[in-house]
Amino acid sequence: MSVVKINVLTVPEDQRETLEKRFAARAGAVENSDGFEWFELLRPVEGTDTYLVYTRWRSEEDFQNWMNGPMQQAHRGGGGGAGDAAGGEGQARRPAASDSTLWSFEVVQQAGAPRQ
Image: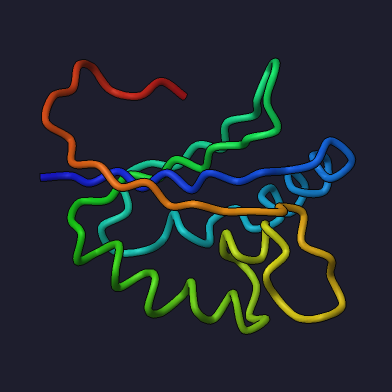
């Protein structure tokens, strides 16, 4: 059963462009991970400063393997992960997000395939 992980990022208005550029620069980092199924960066359109980072995984184990491998490397300055996009790597870069929360879901129903 697939699992969905949504990283809820609070991003001040003056950091939105920075966050989006950092995610664009890390293209391919998560997409090449075993068990990865889907990614979307969702920009708020009104009334909130919350971005959603949506990822879908074949299993919880696949997500945890990514978190304990490539994602940890990104946080240590290896680049390429959501931590990098949020500004979590190194002292030189100011974080674009001021807060982060991870939501977890199991997929119990779906219709169609995500459109690109």
